[in-house]
Length: 158
Image (cartoon, rainbow, N blue to C red; front, side):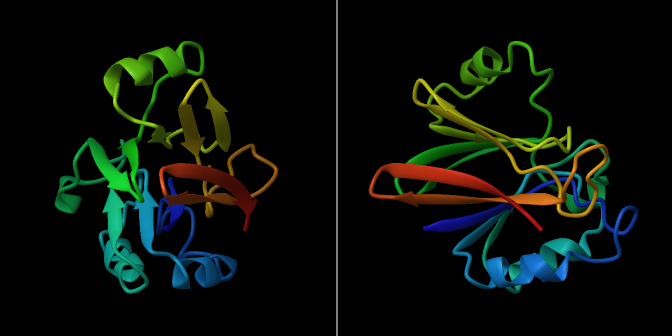
């Protein structure tokens, strides 16, 4: 199972649309994860044209989006949790592990800083942003592969 992971798209404030280079990845996705700050409700429909979408509410998302603050689900036999804001870097691993004790993978956004760390049975993944890099050198997204109880992830530049 392949999930394309994005966050902090801030459409239309930071970009009018998703970058063209992201589209081939969306086309081959089994699932699309959006870790909040979509802003435009139409983006969920657009993403849904490629694959099923799971999304959580970001701090700038309107109530019109009707998204949960957190989500837990199974991805190819792997327990995944998703939240927009995981809090400060210091203490993050322990904090999110307490919040989602069953999760093997925790996807988050908010900072726009790509983050991939797989230690002690917990994979933390922030895909960065494909449309608003802030002070980061590149626009980014992530791929999350889960199959047969095994998981791997990578962050790619758009």
